[in-house]
Amino acid sequence: MKVMEPLSPAPGVQTIGFVLIPGFALMSYAAACEPLRAANIAAGREIYRAAAFGPGVSGPGTIAASNGALIPAAPLPARGAGLSALLVCAGGSPADWGFPTVHACLRAQARDGVRLGGISGGAWLLAAAGLLRDRAFTLHWEHAAALVEAFPDLSPTQARYVIDRDRITCGGGVAPLDLMHALIGERMGPAFARRVSDWFLHAEVSAPAAPQRGGLAERWGVNHPGLLAALEKLEATPDGPVPRAALARLAGVGPRQLDRLFRDHLGATPGETHRRLRLAHARRLLAQSPLSIAEIAQAAGFASASHFARAHRAEYGSAPRDARAAALASGEISGSEGKTTSGG
Image (cartoon, rainbow, N blue to C red; front, side, top):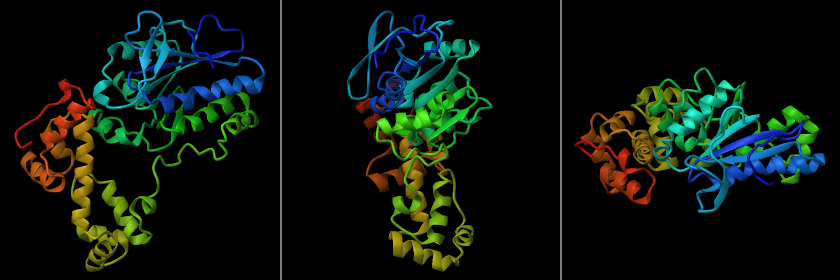
């Protein structure tokens, strides 16, 4: 599909805009805009038009995707641009998503009644613009923990996509295929949407609430229902301890049998398993969030920054500040976000 600025589209043509944040995931963007092209082919006429926009673009320009591909983009749309929807595509690290001009653009489009959405990390920019209050939404699971820390009044849903009135969000990857199937079906009917999905061999269209990640049994390589119940609780509690007795009750066994289950299936105690989960949570925050090391220690349930630093060094062989420095060096986070405190 030719991507262009929405200049007076013909009657019956819906223009879907995409704000491309530098470093956006090309796969997610393609999974969102290619179904529009296929819908035009299936309809035998233009019924959708895609328009790509980018922050900092003052005329015809380009925005670099995560793989370095340059996508043609126009300046951010002004009010009255005639958009049916405007979706923000963001990938990489939240530290690189500080675009006040995008926030202002989104608020202006909201005043025009345009449906707004986010793909992969795009919901983060909607949150920063204050446009997700009282709305259900989702984003890529990798960014969920950092978003909750940055916007404690918001709670993302871990779903493949969410449509809540005038807000449209999805988790990235191939989830935009599911989202666009729903949006095309909403307008053109389920039979037409099925034809478009079949075009991409998208035979198994996922439900909105389908998980973004593989199930517990698949991720952990275990099938014991009691152990899976305990692991689910540990994964859901990255910010503090879970009493051993409470965990045993969830698993439907006694504390000693719980220890045996963990040892036999995972080669670690429940406490060791939970500590590793909390440290993995902290590592994501080190790479993705502007929180200080002391704040990350608290968010991961450690008594102090020094306690966190000792545990981090024991698990990974380096201090938290070294992990943050590595993220800085790789470009995962920007220099302005690398706050540290003693104990790191």
